[in-house]
Amino acid sequence: MSSAADSPNDRFRILCIDGGGIRGLIPALVIAELESRLQDRVGAEARISDYFHLLAGTSTGGLIALALTAPGREVTADRLSDLYTEDGPTIFHRTPFQRVATLGGLIAPKYGASALRAVVEEVFGDAKLSEALRDLVVTSYDMTNRDPYFFKRWRALESEHRDHSLVDAALATSAAPTYFPPHEVDGRALVDGGVFAANPVIAAIAESLKRSTDKPAQLTRDDLLVVSVGTGLYEEGFSQSQVRRWGKLGWIMPHGEDPPVLGAVLGGASDGADHWAHMLLNHPRGAGPPSPTEIGRGPRFFRLQVQLPASIAMDDAGPETLQKRLPDAATELLRAHDKELSEIIERLARFDPLP
Image (cartoon, rainbow, N blue to C red; front, side, top):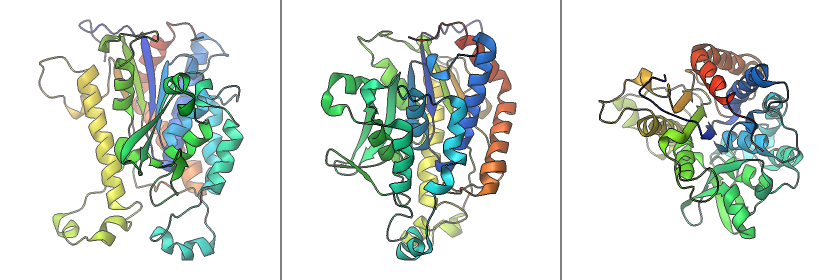
């Protein structure tokens, strides 16, 4: 938490949301609560996107970031949860034929993109990145050129060639390997940015520190307030005797809910990003290594994450998951981080809404 030795001024505020498929309902509910508390503090018209300069997201988090900044679409934080509870079962639906034809996702993506496309087209219409209400960093990965690919508002404002539709950004960042097909943009086969940045907080921090002209610019770490929201954490360990027998199928076949290779990539990247962000923004210079309980507790970087009691697959859109397990996880996150949430709201409320 903050101390007298720290001097953050919150001149540039960042909201980051992790990837995690249907588990995006957790950050959707958390952000809705943040907005509700902010409204209690400053007025009923307050919107969470009016108090952050930059929103960053990966996969399901990218959808949330895009939805909160979509121009003229009136996607309030409270409406976000409907994208999961109402549209999730449609997006993650397979016919018996699809199950057989894809061998459960072994020889083709488990799901087609048509249902997801219909949802994002309804939400975003024909809006472009340049029209977004706030700066954006939405991650994807270019399988054609084998490079990270970012959808950024400032790039779109600079170049018409980079001014893609919000629908393109949404479909690219959501194209999780083995779940959805890649999305083509300008000849690039783009997939879910979770393959390198399941937690996009480091990308967002780097983006903010690169600002040289657009105000606020020439930022230092004391200028930043970073709020990073996770999608729930459940890590199932495997013994040496188990892992040593795995070949290709062993790594990609689910052992529980998600394939081990996917869990290792997403979980490892997210854990690393938390540590790096804390060291960059929170940790006193020259001090020893932080304890795990110190990570993401402020004063500049706040990490809002919750431990799940059991694994929840990225595509588990069943009634129990949507109506109980994920809402319960969001409630636990809010309870465990109530002190940090109160500090965040207090600091946001010091500022007028952004124009």
